[in-house]
Image (cartoon, rainbow, N blue to C red; front, side, top):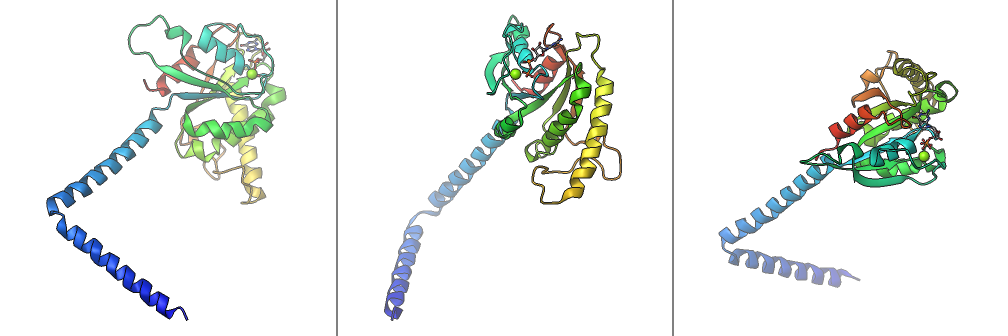
Length: 261
Ligand SMILES: Nc1nc2c(ncn2[C@@H]2O[C@H](COP(=O)(O)OP(=O)(O)O)[C@@H](O)[C@H]2O)c(=O)[nH]1
Ligand SMILES: [Mg+2]
């Protein structure tokens, strides 16, 4: 029935092919090579720009459970004070600025983009939105109220450390033990050990559940060995801070090291 149509189509195609061939034959080879060269060059250039863009991200994510002091730290970084009394923020707080401590400095200044992503579980999708562009993640821990909170904190940290966007790009993570102005604050060393122990438990229980558990995109650490942050392929450092008194030099160092000018 449609044989005729198919035949017609074939002929038409053949005709077009012939025309195209003729057209190309009429172009001097030099012009042809130049055109191909230009196309290749553009493609390579676009690729380089893409790669370049990715490595020069200036976004630092501040996250952690609510109450850990992220908003205080955000204002300390930007304004040099924690003036903004705290209402539990339900929206990510974000801004691009020059670190307050660098404002009086001359020379090349880096504009940093800081996003304070609240730790509420229903806002976690916000994290996925910002992670792909992160040059670093600061995980804020309340060192005073650490014991009542270390389980949910470990779970949240575990979630971050197993994200594809963190593992694949080896996003550096700073574990920031905050509120060290209080004498009752636990030491960074104690906090590190507790987090490692708890993550070790989570790792065992979660990998045992099933492969269908989509929340963990990657497995952590070395199988058969107790978990330690040093086993992660991305750098995980631990530091102390106080958003209240403005003791944030280690946090600023982390930002400076990971945000390229
Ligand atoms: N002692 C002390 N308290 C702090 C510090 N930073 C924050 N806080 C307290 O912790 C509460 C929560 O801080 P906030 O920045 O809102 O936490 P966020 O929920 O993580 O944004 C605040 O009401 C402060 O009273 C700190 O460095 N030292
Ligand atoms: Mg907040």
